[in-house]
Image (cartoon, rainbow, N blue to C red; front, side, top):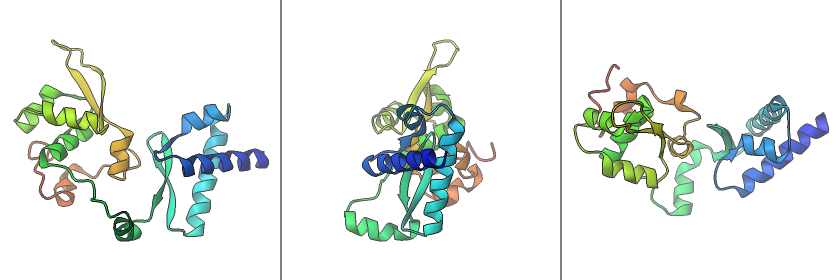
Length: 187
């Protein structure tokens, strides 16, 4: 078993190094033909502990059903300088729509529009193209409107491990002061 765990950890590290996206744990389990999901979880937990103990400039983070290497927050300014790229920016409309979807998912376009008070079709198209939201079926009501949910890419961009990591809706305004969500407050 110890050599099997070492092999699983080696493969996971290799996949993480070559992947630009989070590595799906189900894909690793299928790739390595691991029948016992607990074995994969044990290998991942050991890897997380090893990187945490090493106190490196990066660590392992679980994102939805996947894992990825992420850099420490205190290195963000150096990384931005190195990449000389612009940080991800969102319009007020996109942030409002993303927040509504994140906190109310699955949710339909008419429901989003009733909260925002404006047409959301353009913003929804943009968020779909950017792969921050996805369509997850249709609501079983008259007209069968599409249901929207957030994606793992949303979790990745906002540095969330899961939807349960979302900040309390009442503190959302503190994190994003230029975004007003009055109809979501206290709900």
